[in-house]
Structures are given as C-alpha cells and as structure tokens.
Amino acid sequence: MSAIETERQTEQVAIAGVDIRTEDIAAVAEVLASGRLREGEVTAEFERAFARRVGAVHAVAVSSGSAALHLAYLAMFQPGDEVIVPSFTFVATASMLSAIGAVPVFADVDERTFTLSLADAESRITPRTRGIVGVHLFGNACDVDGVTALARRHGLAVVWDAAQALGTRYRHRDVGAFPVATCYSFYPTKNITTGEGGMVVTDDAALADTLRLSRSHGAAGKYVHLRLGFNYRTTDMASALGLSQLARLDGYLARRRENAATLTAGLSGVPGVTVPCPAPSADHSYNQYSILVGWHGNGRLDRDQLAAAIGPRGVQTAVHYPRPLHRQPMYAGANGGLTAAERLPVSERLCEHILALPVHPGVGPAQAGRVAALVKAAMSGDS
Ligand SMILES: *Cc1c(COP(=O)(O)O)cnc(C)c1O
Image 1 (cartoon, rainbow, N blue to C red):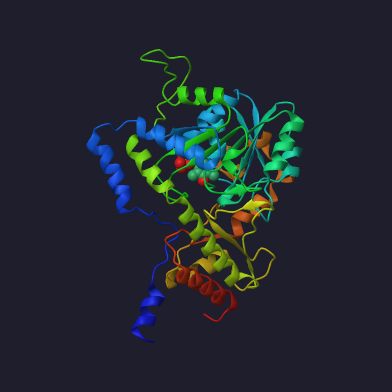
Image 2 (image 1 turned 120 degrees about the vertical axis):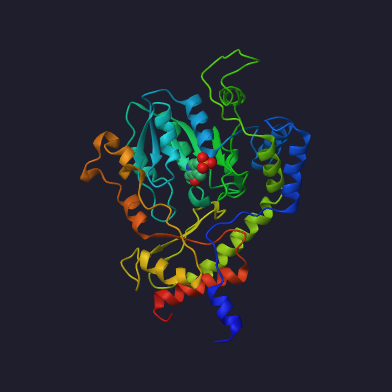
C-alpha cells in the first residue's frame, strides 16, 4: 500500500462540522467592537432576512430551538391540552409541551419518510386533543397537506418543528411558509448555526407579538409585564453570525443534496441497506442522511456492527435516535400508560436499525464516495 493510500485510509470523515469563515468572524467582531451586544438592530435585520428567505411574514429570534418550541406552545396551547407528536424525534418536540403543562401524545411514524404517520396520529385524537406537531425530521418534509387536512377536520392547531429543516421545501414552497408557526434551531449541527439560537416564523401578526413579549419576560416597556415570559432573547453577536451563515445557505444546501445523491447512488442495491426516502413533494435538505441497516431482516452486519466496521476506517457515524420518546424514562406511563398492545412499532424498530452517515457541507464529493464505498464493502464482506 502506498503512503498516499495509507493516508486516505485513515482520513477522518466527521459526522458533523461547522463552517466558520473570515466573513463570519468579521461580522461578529463588528458587533463586539460596537459594544451593543444584546438583542438589537442586527437581530431585527436577521429576523427580516430569515422571514424573507422562508417566505414567512414574521420571524422572532430566540435563544434556542427549544425556546422557539416552548414559546410557540405557550402561545397556542393550555395546560391539560393533548397535543399529538411523533415519538421518533428529538426530546424537545415533546418536552416543551410538558413544560407548559400540556400532554404530549405520542404517535408512530412512517417507516419510509420517518415522519408522522397520519393514520396513527388520527387514531390518537380524543375530545381533549387541541394540536398536532409535524416534525420535518432530518430535513425531510412531513406530509404538510395531510397534517393540515387532519388538523382542519378535528379543529386542531398545528406547529411545525423545522429545527432540522431550514431550506426544505414542500410542493416547491419552503416549509417555513405554512401556517401557523414553524420553529427552527441554529445549534451547530443544524443547517446554519449561531452557536445556540432559534427562530419562530408565522404569518399571524398577533402570534408574533405574543412571541416577542414572552421571549423577554412579557415586558411592554420597562418593568411593565403583560404576561408570563422568559429571558429567551438572542444576542446581536449570534444574529451577526446567523446573517452571515444565511447568506451561504444555498451553497450549504447544494452540498448536502450533492453528498446525499452520491451516497444514495453508491448505496442503492447494497444488501441490507435502505437509503433515505424523500417524502412525495419534498425537497429534502439532508440535515441528516440516515440509512436503515438490516431493516428487511437481511444484510451481513447489523447497525452496530456496520458502525464498528467503518469507524476505524475514518467514517464517523451517529444514531438519531437510539430510543423513541414514549420509551424515555421521563415519559414512562405516557399515552395514558402505554400497554404492550399500544406500542409504536415503527418508532421502536427504527431506533434499532437507523444509522446517520456524514452528509454535512464539510464532506467533499470524493469523501462522500468513499463513505458509500466503505459501507458497501463492509456489507458485502469484502472489506
Ligand atoms: C435541535 C432540535 C430541537 C431543539 O433545538 P435546540 O436549538 O437544540 O434547542 C428541537 N427539535 C428538533 C427536531 C431538533 O433537531
């Protein structure tokens, strides 16, 4: 083996990475030099640019994606309200409902798109159900028309969790353009980052006003508090980084989609590997590229064996998620005491078979090809 080949063999392909450029640093440094660090004009500019980008009327910047969900839920639901959420998602989708005293009711997901199963969601509607949360998981679009129609039939409010889906489109419209509220995160693994940060977008002016109040202790003017609120403000340093990153979003999305196409081309037909399936009408943004290993009972290696085989060859992987929310210790007894007969079989099985491969913009075309080749070799037994 030549020296170059040895080097290639051990080259690391990380599962996530941030892209911080000179212009990002300059934008943040400018805010620092101004001395105006708190939420101010730069944040207002970030909100306007973000709303324009996703085709929403109002955007409200907050300190995290979890804060975005918390404030949207607080504005839209009451304590005791049942709200349907998928079980296969990040905990904040559900836990921020618990934070306001609402009751998350876990529904199963579709095994191809990993997003909410409409049939299962509908079966869980009771007279106390007030809302439904569609999660655009991994950057795939959930069935926006289906969820909207279901919500209309049963008089439910809809919140979209697009923490992983900045840039995802549904029927050629950005997922942020659908009523009534869409929540984003700017954590370092998301499609753009501000370190920590989040955004709620909406076309509802009254809702936007409520969100603005509650992100800052419900304060209208100095020491006049109209409603319960929090300190969920962001900073102008974070917003300067967000504006700078947002300007490169199209490039990031193009690279994610290109890497996903390379992975899918290299992995289609590999025994034991199921490649991700963009939902009908979805323009997937591939915040995560998650394959299923041995889903159909086939394949030489299981998920953990595959991760162990390619890890030493430099390919980092991750499991999103190893445990469905209805099986989390904090939700033991959820769904009114989920019995064995009321299991969520798809969510539970996905957690055993899912594996995320590197797809972020820091992964070059040759690296994406190498990742696919290593997975294929490992699953075919000729590595
Ligand atoms: C990241 C994420 C959140 C929470 O965002 P934070 O910024 O980490 O608080 C919520 N929902 C989903 C689906 C996420 O991926």
